[in-house]
Length: 246
Length: 246
Image (cartoon, rainbow over all chains, first blue to last red; front, side, top):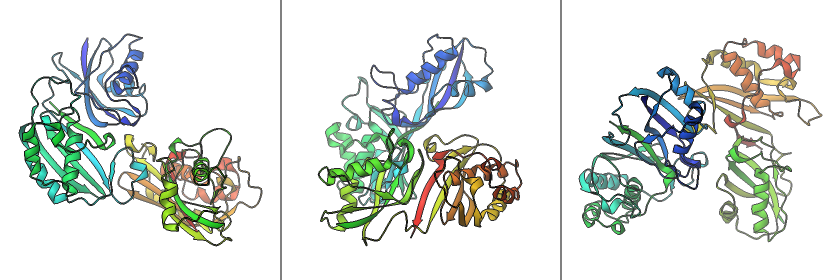
């Protein structure tokens, strides 16, 4: 058996999320179905760096699995890719040691969130951006971001639906807001992210940008350790799992 | 009764085309369904500048219809827009004279065709571009374009499935190829376009770009007045009805 690590990219629009669940199509189910075809009906268990929610996208999700197949590594990308639907792509495939684990070995992740900031929504990017028409003060959002960086208990930015029982302390290495044409892009790099954390961060930052909160309120929200103190959860379609670091 | 002219925009991905047909969802059917709701169940006939095929998009399709409703013009866009699915948008609405006709009065149209020219397809734009991996010589395609401009009988660039019985003489005012990042964009402005004409033009130009035909072959193809002489029909998803001129 050899262990393979793959970087995959997907359009989450038509999926109930990454992880296999009783109802709804998932990315994991599609990957395992394609691998089963390659393995003559044998089940191949796929492990990812983490889940993504329904309608959330990935440009750099990382998975691993084990296989007894003797396929040259250079052919894996095309072999599996040709069996996947056109909204899931294999970016790269590499053989890794038997100790490599896509989830446990992840040292951090980068997420990006795209807001289309214009009077009208861009019809052709409606599945990949969150449309905001209101005025947004970028300087205020940048200041709020600076209060997010560092090691904090992010309980206030975690959905109560989480199944995490341990610590909610995480480190955000970088929290950034930039403008790309009509888009406002939020970039978060951190040691790890809690359930819905990036979407709650973005929802809160947008409230700061709309002058509904002060940038320094973010400090108070973190200290409160109470989900009700933070802003609304931003919708899923603007969110991209950008990169996983090992 | 007043006559209203609207500019509409749509993502054709999930439609069987513009025009109502027995099987499959169409843009016209969605427009008429939304208008019927506004008119308490009364049928409102919508006339467009012309059809678009399944999976073809529009950023500037023009329609007209008549209504007995007394709604301020400024409210029409939102009133109809709120009843349409999220892949059809109203860009503008204006009252026009009773003589205005979206199809008969159209003096010309502009179409654009987007080719994503890269080793890998952009997953998030797969419904809005045609992916071409092969090398393409833009200079050759530009030269071929110059032979398309002017008044010609475009029989060779018309699908035999057309229901046009009259002349196939049309004037192309502008045929252009430009590069926008990793995209190659074909722009055609003309007095009118035959069935599948833009897609056959693009398919033929791509063959010139791949060195499978010479730029000056285009002259011979036009003269042949035979669909078999032209190139393949490029796929629908890269095509946008960009503007209609009156």
